[in-house]
Length: 360
Image (cartoon, rainbow, N blue to C red; front, side):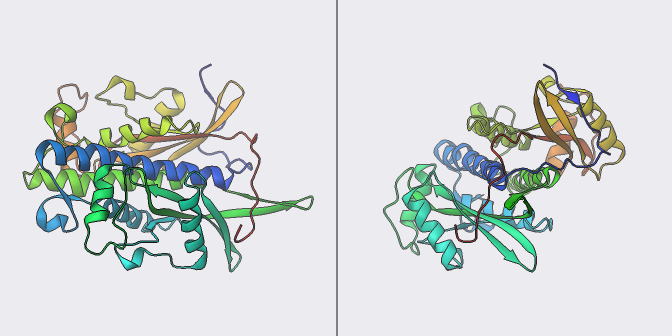
């Protein structure tokens, strides 16, 4: 059944909250999806096909940033948005001492995910009447090059990693709310904030990739981005980087989705799918600083959907769209809104809200 709009962007945010563990899995899937695409489709593939390395001194060497450096840059970009969301890599065997556990809880979390890689470690912190949800997910060697880099680094305390081994953990932290009814305490995240957290990571991944990988390497004439990136041994276009990660996330069956849409799509599949998306894109073309949010219904299922402006963050974005033979619009400018990023997730309460106590 086609979805229909239940509320408009001006309506109040629903009272139902999203369980924080579900939000954590959404955020981790975005981080890990981009990290996997970057490691496999860029670092490993381009090393094998054209000899393009990933190095610590990537700026001076005209190479790719290491996957850990790419994540650190996106994390810093997210932190600068002042949403209260943060994430970082940690390890019991850090190459950089700053990436070791900063507390006994972080150390215990790393030890637990090493023993049970499929089970994230969770705790809640309370500070001056504010609550934050903390979770550590296992960080695995998704390519042989990840393991080899750690094994061969002169500062690495551990040199026997293999493909698939746990290298450390990804610590994600974000604000949550608490309510008590009938003697039961629940923790939750407002849907609009959950969408903002997801988008902040997506926007950071795309911006860092476009600026520090595509634009820099094209400017240095080291490599270039191509729609036929696989055949041409080239870089993925920024849109392809985001969409390939999205396809990877769908295999996790989290019932959560994000995609690119535009009023002027190069790919017809990226047209708005319904009136809410069409209206949202038109609104953002006139007021590009504000997302559009609402509740959609598909059958008996309600979804929270948010559309965020998708901007041309580098000259490469502008040149690609303006020069593409299938582009309906050929006069984009730098920083102009080219379309939107749609984030969608269910609002069902079947799983209920999850309660935790500090240290649990």
